[in-house]
Length: 257
Image: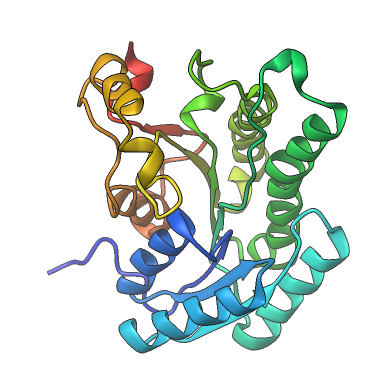
């Protein structure tokens, strides 16, 4: 019997792997046998995540603190992974930030910070991994975590820089897919809607957001823990060989209306 989603022996870097969706996706890949490199700025948190994954899923892990906006640190991180594992098969670009304020009150600094982290940081990591590991190997899976707000605007939570940056990630995904297809590297993005995490639970459970779900989301609820996992596994696996340049919304139908 074929296990289409077996990732045994594959090495996966997950950025923003200290909390929330990054940790969930790292665990999902580890459950399929992938070796996990947890990357984020907070050293203690990623070391805890890496240890938990190693203990639970019996796979090799590595924790590397890294600021994804710093090109030298990104390159050094990729070099460290290659030194330990000799390969990088999967990159999940999950690290990000979010400035929330009315557009007319957003500062230049907030706007530039958003672009630097969500868009430039995504590009820097993809560039380093492709150049140093995936192009030489003639194989790779790059998964950029964009957002449903990279596809549409919104009226309930002013965050224009976030929309702009994630919209950039959406088209960056297409551009890299077009360029790197000849190297058998697939580049796709996931555009999540609102998901429950320890940081969002209180907000999403509020009366306002519960009513918003019933009004704006066809499935009338927010994403539960684990509901992004299967999408990440599919796009990371050898089974998705002919899928590239796709921006896949996992949003309960929010963007279909």
